[in-house]
Image (cartoon, rainbow, N blue to C red):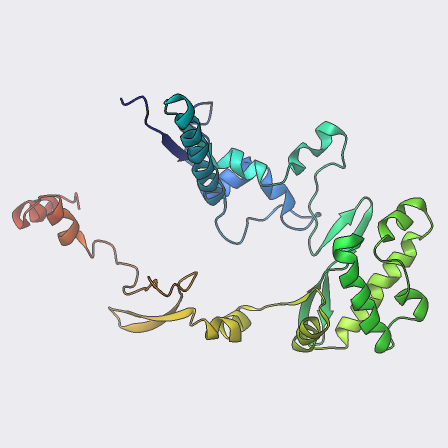
Length: 299
């Protein structure tokens, strides 16, 4: 083997260790990484992530590892084997939350529709007049200005008073920790946000978010995703014709639009055995051999 080769491997549990040869899926890799401890309601079992993630994390780590190995090879001329585990990569993707108890931080827990600040649950998902919206209500130099603009808007509409509007939203966490601002007062503000949201439709709140620079997005239903103006403008949804029986099915299209090399979907998912002749023919099996294998139930 050429000692200068760099080989990157992506597997569920790595090339060595007690689970190296275990069969796995995205779900089991995520579950074993403890990442699912962060998904779902805190009073119910965890739920899987909406889309496959674990092998994407591992692939990114493998690519980064290969580049690092290449840099090292430029120095010493030696290749390396980069071993990326979906389990380990997903664990790192929790941003070290799985290690919280080890260094005395708040133990890992999951919350749905908000975040926990110590014993305080800050609700982010609120009911609107026609569904639900997510409202980011946080503090500090990065997010406090958004909260200030939110309170300005709520004050204009009569949902909070001047005292609430004028709170120090940038330094609000310190006020809570010092006891200057009691927790019930924070929860009162959250309830006021809920009342304000319920007085508006999702689209009204979204337009206010765009106009006033707020952090509010609608919680979309499946039908709303299918008819999203943004996705329609991107020509995201693609109609693909299925055969036997013939029908047209709407598919999620290219994840990005490239001017030089556009991605196109031309064929529907194959039926079982639909392309046997092309595949086995390319492998050197002639018609007689294929028919023999078919008669014996091999294919």
